[in-house]
Length: 76
Image 1 (cartoon, rainbow, N blue to C red):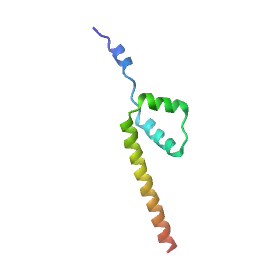
Image 2 (cartoon, rainbow, N blue to C red):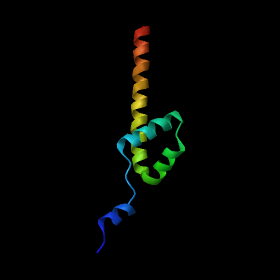
Image 3 (cartoon, one colour):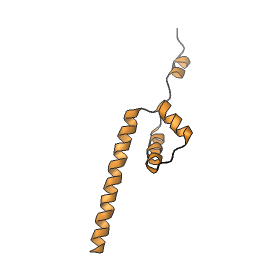
Image 4 (cartoon, rainbow, N blue to C red):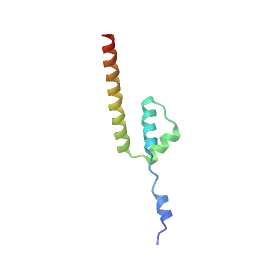
């Protein structure tokens, strides 16, 4: 009979959404601690990084387009 506590120790903990978002934001700035990098490689899934990274890129581009349209409209 297996003990449930032993089974839980074998599976790595999943990254929280807040950790994933902070990783994407710090990655966009180009700064990341070694501790966070090790956590990302040991607990994160590549598909989650790709999904959040593409989402961040889309939002960033939309914000830039909006700012440029606003500035050109105000410059008139």
